[in-house]
Image (cartoon, rainbow, N blue to C red; front, side, top):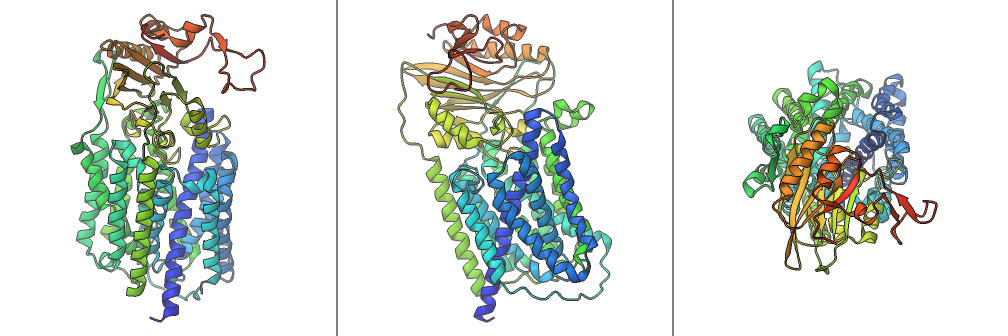
Length: 639
């Protein structure tokens, strides 16, 4: 192969990598925007119409063959334009803009998966692997937050978009071929796009952000990232062998991956108390044996690359206007399965449908696993060659290795804990419901919330609604994001797998004996995070709660909490208790522990903090918190 042909191949791989990256970013932003609007209003409103944008690619059927190339170019431009806009827009605008970007991606996918434009997917699998490595690197330097989607590094994302545009303009696109009219079975033409989006779902849900796995299971973020990057780097180096892999081996590989993923989730799903008389379930931080399924799952994760090589090699229907129907179906299944993952957290709000989803975080992963394996079982051997010349493979391997080193440096640098001063007499305590990282209008607000935490400079922080390590809030381990930003120790607490809304503890002091306490619940899982710190030679129990549901459930939570605190001489218990001072659950805990605000201001009306109080509150610097539901409780031996 000539040097010029090698260059064109490298351009195709780079374009595929950036396209995969932009698809994941657009999908993350679009779904997150709809989810945040639902969280703010605790119900779905007009944002539900954003889902209809899934069907926008079907307009492809009205364009004649002579206009196909124009539609393709417009779709590519739409991907680039929407990728530029999403970091600077709010959630309402991003429901529309992100949805349009996803629709443009689906149109491009319909072209690439058609027989007439099969040249578009040559070397696409190599690009997919590089795209994953880029995503992991960007999130590594943001402590699981993609640094190009917000904050000071938006310019880097725009630079990558410019690079993609420049490559598109410089690349020599081949003329589409008039394909032979092969008899493609309907089931085969449907299974290919469905399989593509089942594999993309794994990139979106899990692999593009390894911190998701560490937040699920308490595994080492560094080890998770190291394992994932190493095996994918090796897989890219061995692409020819992946293409030659036999169907039986690929089936077994997929089965092993799915069993480890689903089995690991089930092993980390706690038993919940079925009634008030059962008492709480205590779930201690998982040991290495319980974490091993996820480590092995990450080792097997390049099965996604092997699957995509086979899928990109399939014959398909002739024209994009025919392929667009199964493409939309494949993405619709991805969307539905993502929603099922949300239902495992919101089971208590779904009436009669709630029961199957309680403790059901594994359901969407299991169903996606079925969609992952079906194409491998039934689709034929490759017909579109994915092979790259040796010179290009060497460049690909070197690029992958550089990305691995960049990502690992990011994890090490961001998680480095410099020594911090630890007071031994006086503590500042903060309880903070961060509403899954949203501001009042629903816009993502992680960076401003981190700035706020730095300003408060609390020694102990109890976070509620920190369950962000899932697609709805952007696949961000927000406890890690804040902990790295502050240099604090973290305990994620009851994780996403358990279906809670996340009670994490951040601490200047090392956290000992971390554990999650699950009380009887009728609506949301009442998961309390607990740990111990030592201050000036004194051991202090730290508890962070966020109960909800019926009055009966809140009383059960308080009774369990009081029982757990009884063994400590010193206790700090914070949280969003969803109980006002006039309610029975509040009265029960107030009989045992002192409410810090009420101890200072008996009538609930007190002074704003002199430097961080909201200046927008009129009056004489006082705030009425007589009907508050967020509290800090202490044992009487605190002043």
